[in-house]
Every structure is written in structure tokens, then in C-alpha cells.
Amino acid sequence: MQSQENVMPNRLKTFKNRGKDLEEMRRRRSEVNVELRKARKDEQLQKRRNIALLDEPQSPLQESNNRTQLNMSIETIMSEMNSTDPQTLLNATQAARKMLSRERDPPIDVMIQAGMVPKCVSFLSHFNNPTLQFEAAWALTNVASGSSEQTAVVIKAGGIPALVALLGSPSSNVAEQAVWALGNIAGDGAGPRDMVLGANAMPALLELIRPDTSVSSLRNIVWTLSNFCRNKNPCPPFEVIRSCLPFLNRLLHVSDPVILADACWALSYLTDGSNEKIEAVIREGVVQQLTELLGSSDITVLTPALRTVGNIVTGSDVQTEVVLQCGALPHLKRLLQHSRGNLVKEAAWTLSNIAAGNVTQIQELINEGILPPLIHILATGDVKAQKEAAWAVTNFTSGGTAEQIVTLVHHNILQPFTALLDSSKDWKTVMVVLDGIKNILETADKLGELEKVAIMIEECGGLDKIEELQSHENQQVYKKAVSLIDTYFSEEGAQDQNENEEEAAFPGASVPNGGFQF
Image (cartoon, rainbow, N blue to C red; front, side, top):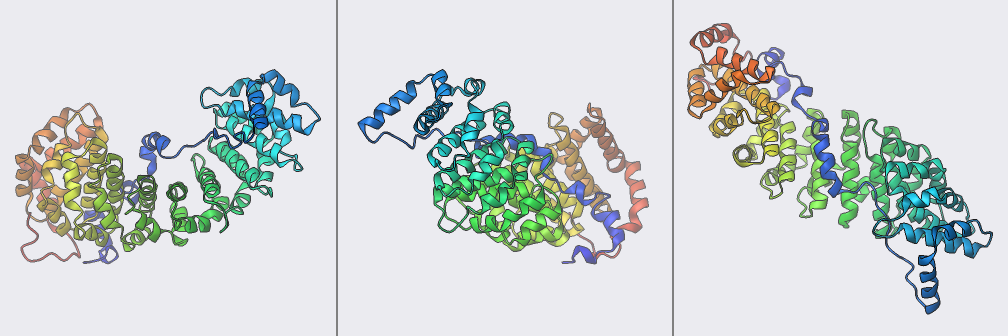
């Protein structure tokens, strides 16, 4: 099989890519960001409220104290937060925290209006009283788990630098609660995230990832780390974020699925960007393990692992090749047949970007047997998966050789592919399919088999659908449909096409005697 680099440059424009550049063929996350953001709500929470009560009463005296705190009014809590007595301060802060830890309707706004947040922030600097620091940090964690407006109150009160300082606390409970609070703040959006990173939180957080770190603490740390990497427009400063890559690499080898999932989410955010960022992730050596995680039976791990691999293959052919060399295709083939529709869609999207690669990579798709399940999706998949499968086919026809495109047609692609031309479908999907049909017809014309393929398209109902699209409300759709009819389905158009392109069919390419037959 010829590599793309050995094909004459003229052919790249006259046949292979038909005027499309790599950016048009490869598609990053921006097209489906809204949909993914909705899905992500269930897959990984941006904010979490700490409602666990770690201080269950162990004695009648403690139980009595517990009831007293729960019955304290907000006015009493605020009054006692002004006390100079350490125990009174602690009791009041603990009472505030318990109110904010209620599972239903915590009075966050009422506590904010009463002035609790600045008090709790001031208590974070009481390094001689780690229990008070812990309770104050917990209360602030739950305030920051609320709305953006509520989180902003914590930020305005100076909560970020005070919490970052606690990451180095000798008390593991205090440090862990600060981690959680900073994770909630960073999860509020790009602005708060950058404030946290600007306070030097990243190196302090990474210091907490040690061989002796407990699994529960590590879960919290990695979740917060993923929020440091999260959100776009703007993305986090990469010069700061890249320092976490060696840690994420190590975390991919732990056995805990919660840690694995959040490490994969962090990598998915970092690879959702430029080729330079993708290259930095690849150079860290994570691709092999990510590929192996595509075989995971745990959906919470599999989903972000697939998303990260999918992001990597939006990069260059060389970057895509790393994924292929790590053995991703058998996993992707299996995922095309998964029972979960969102995983099928993601796998098809990933394959659509691999199909935008060079002819050797397209041949790997054929050799792995990707075409039958992909065509099955075109025929029976849900609308979102069908759209991604359509992109995969059209990219295949844009970058494939004549022999590869003939192979595609031999797999009976035309009937399910043209069925997507139904005018009720999303117009962008219709445009993708029209491009693919044009590529197939163009190839057939150059092989002297235009009439045969045109009849095949007509017999499966494709021509009728193209004719209907000539009255489509979208200008781009009807213009493309008219052009296809005029060029390939009218005697005059087909004759002109033959005369114009007879001499230009595959310069420098190797075509067997008699050509490839559809």
C-alpha cells in the first residue's frame, strides 16, 4: 500500500482530498460541546457538597452537644462566631457547617447574608486550631458548591489564598477539606479556575499525591485536579497545567475506578485543544494505557478514556498513528456495537477522525473489519451515531484511494448512506452525505464506471432523494443537489465530466489493467 507521502502532490488536490484540508475533515469537540456538556453532568460533577457527618456523637455528652448545635439559630451562631473563646468559636462554626451540610435546602444564602463567609475565611488562618480550620473549610466548601454567585462570595472574601495555604497543613483532614473547597471553586468556570491556579494551587495540590496517600484522599485530589484542567474559553494556562501530566500518567495505573475515571477526564480536557497540547500528552506516554482502558467494563472509566483517545486522533496523522500502533482499532470496533448509544456515537466520531488520515490508516480501518459495523450504524443507529458514521464514510471517500472506495461500495454502503438524505434529517448531515456521494461518483467516473454507480444509486432510491433536495429550504443543500444532478445524472453533464477529467484520473497512481470495478 502506498503511503500518502508517496502520492504525487497534484493527486492530493485533483483526487484524494478534493479541495478539503485537514481541518475540514477532522472535527474537534466544538461541534458537539453543548451535547457533551449535558452528558457530562451525570458523568462527572463539577461541584460536590460534603454532607457526610464525620463527627457522629460517641458519648451522651457529645450527643447532647450535637443536638444543641443543630438547634442553634443563625443569629446565635453569628453572635458566637465573634467570641474570643476557642471552644465557643468551634461550636458555632461547627453548627454553621452542619446547617450547610443538610441534604435538603441548605440555607446558603441566609448564612451568606448573615456574614458567615468572611468569618470562616478568617478562621482558616488559625493554625493553632486545626479543628476550627477544618470546620471552617468544610462550611466554605458547601457554600462554594452552590451557584456562581454563592461561590463568588467565597472568592471575594479572600477564600482562595487562604485555602491554598491549607494544602500544606500538617493535618490531613484540613488539607483534604481545602482540596475539596478549591475543587468546587475551580469547577465554577474558567475565571474562578484561573484565580485558583494563579494562587499557585497546582504545585501545592500535586505535593499531596504521594505513595502513602489514602485512596479516599486521592479521589478528592484527582477530582480537584480534573477541575483545574477543565473548562474552555479560555483554556487553563498550559504552562501551569502541563506540570500535572507525569502525575496523571501514574494515576492511570491505579486500580481504583473513581481515581481512574477522574484522571481520564483530566486528560480528556487537556487533549481537547491544539496539536501542541495533544503532543505534550502523547509524549508523557499515556496513550498505551488509555488504549487498554478502552477495554474496561466500567462505564465510568471507559467513557472518559474513549473521549481522550477520540480527542488525540483529531490531531495530525503522526499523532493518530500513535493511537493505532497502541492497538485501539479492535476496541473501537467493539464499541461500535456497544449497548450504550453515547459510546457508539463517540466511537464513530473517533473513527471519523481516523478516516481523515492517510491512505495507510484508512487501509487499517478496512483490514480491522471496521466497515461492516460502521455500515450497520448507518442503517440502524440513532440519529447522533448515524451522523458520526456518515462523517466517517465521507472522510473515507475524501482521502481513500480508488481501490479503497471501491471496497467501500462493495460493502453495500450506498443504500444506508443515501437513506440519510431524507429531507427531514439535519441539513449538516445531509451535506456530509452529499459530499460522500459526490466523491464516490467522481471516483466511478474516473474509472469509467459512472453509469454503473449512478444506476446503483438510483436503484436504492438515492437519486429520488437527491432530486427532492433540489427544493430544500437550505441554500447549500439544494445547490449541492442540483450540482450532483447536473454533473452525474444528466447525459450532457456526464459527457462533459468525462471529457474534462479523462486525462486527469490518478496521475502517478498505480491502477491495474481494467481498473477497479464497482
